[in-house]
Structure formats: structure tokens, C-alpha cells
Length: 138
Image 1 (cartoon, rainbow, N blue to C red):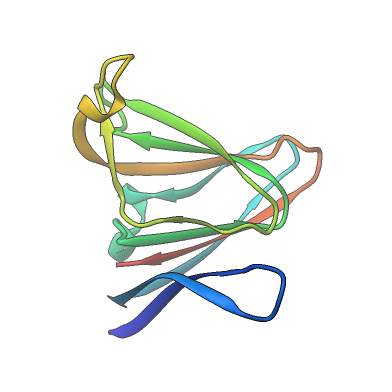
Image 2 (tube, rainbow, N blue to C red; image 1 turned 90 degrees about the vertical axis):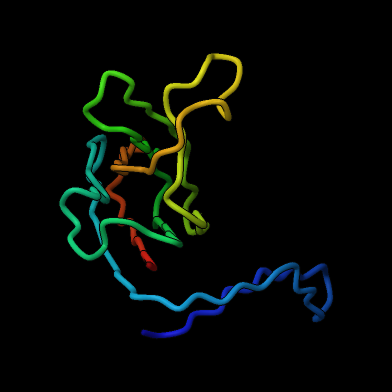
């Protein structure tokens, strides 16, 4: 096991940084690199296919081009839930846990059943190939 320290710092103009938060993880790390071809979809991570990396306590994603991400919760069930967002070019997205909710009402996503993210897919929609790097920590 190795120790990872994540610090969130902000720099406002000058050379001084303000540390906003800090958290230490003891982890097993996995690094996955996935290609997302022009106007194509690709599975970035699938819990059912990931062996020792079937869950995460921290996930960091970075792409060299903007890509749309899709998160699947409760995959294959009648109450499967999909969520999406855009991952900006060279801007890291971090998820501090794989917990997510499904089977919620239209007006309250927090009222759903607690589960985990089962799959993460990406789609490139900017007419270029993209490389997405995922780092998973458990």
C-alpha cells in the first residue's frame, strides 16, 4: 500500500497559494488510458470487467480533448440510471467515491436508492480523437 495526499490549492495573482483542503488516502492504484475516437463512444471503466479495480475511493479523469462522460448506476436493471457531464480539455475531474443514487423521483435525486457507479463511458463530439487517462484509488 502507498499513501497519496491530495491538496486543493488556489493561486490568486501573486506567488502565494492558499490550501483549501487536504486529504490522505492509503491506496492501491490503477491507471487506465483509453482512446476515444472521433464521434465514437468508448467504455472507460466497467466495474464488472475491472478485477481488483472494481470500485474506487478516488477517481481522477483527465482528457486531452473535451469529451462527454456518461455514468451508469444499477446497470442492467429496470431502474438503471444514467448521468452525464462534459469533461473539459486538460482539466481534471475527481470523484471522491463511487457511490451514486438511482430510482429517484424527478424532483429529488437525493431520495433515490444508494448504489455505486457501474460503468463510465465517453463520447468524443468535437471531430478529433481524444485520450482519457483514469487513475483509480481503492
